[in-house]
Length: 514
Image (cartoon, rainbow, N blue to C red; front, side, top):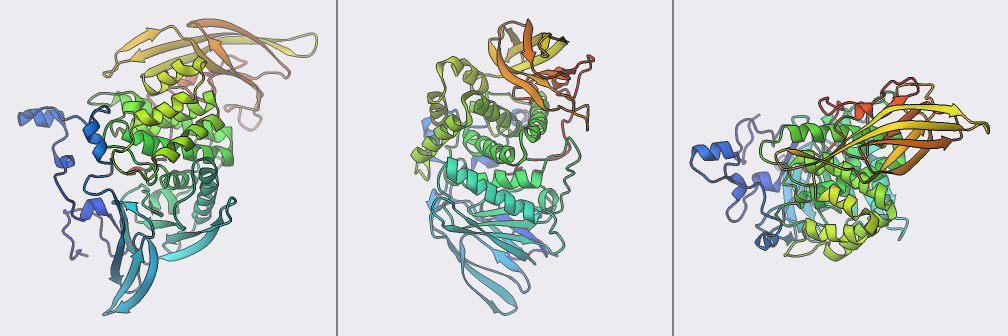
């Protein structure tokens, strides 16, 4: 099948017989010079005697605040369009359907958006089935239509997606701000690509990571990623389509990192702490692999330069740790205040510096340095249980004595590490035996943060029940280059983790091309 009316590069997969999906940036004309078309690799630029090209404008370059990170040829637009496709297919475009008709063996659809949107939207067409549902806002009782467009026979995860939409709308409207649209649509596209992408009230979603994905709930390393990716993409209706950053360093912090955090919280409410530890271990190992493969420079998270291993993977770790340190309510209040100030703003656009200001304002003085470690520095730990033992006391409790090790390093942009003396509050956990799987954590008997003030430290604590495992940062909230030695059972066997050299997981759980 050869696409007509569109000029496409050979091998491109935008237009298909059944499953067309393209966005405005990839096909439609843009206004002005686009520097993204320049050669990006510095080694290639050197060959042509070109100066090195920075990945992003400096965060203090105020001229970059005039354009959003999604493009510079327009800001907020009003959009109305008519799209036609072959008979038997449904074409979907931004906005709400006003009218449809058939003419000359073509099927026409007239769409109109009722509020301004960013100049970034998508068109899709396929032989779709549609499953419909509704979400009712518990605050004002207004209804939001839910529509899942899918290929017949691919019904496997539709209920998970609808559930993910509802749970996400519940959490985000309660904690951040009202949802700005009257519908949420998820649309399947073929697995020539495996990502999901969020446009105004419209989420194209690859069949490969959603509609035909199989999640094995009995596999301790498997994550319900159709549910998670749905939550992540719905979060972009806030982070990306309400809040949009300037075209400079840190832009992805306000779009991707915040969406990762938002989805993590929806996931935690639904599946609990155990699911978080699996996901965070995967995120950590992916981050560690990414920094090992960095060919320019690693920067602190606040200055990320469209580096996926930073804004996705490290971002998940940092935001979850931040929530753990200052509290979910405090963090969400800071984000809610930030959204209230900058949502739908015209140029100059917001930056990571502004968002970070709201976070630090919500941080107690005792944790200011911890937050700097998370956002302003490149910090890597190697936490380890060296040994531990317990004895039963006369009153039927158990006294634990343990030797723990905490290596902490500060890294520069090329990975050179400087050893630091730790001064950190880190989780220490004691767990019972998991009768179903002795290689995974049982029920937490004790879980509290302890101040770790030196590299090797002896700790003592008393618990009410017989301990089977002891862990330092057992749920992987900190960046740790080797999680394999974080947890030890009573026989001295290291349990559960893996080093950053390993894959840490078998599924892709981020939005890919958001």
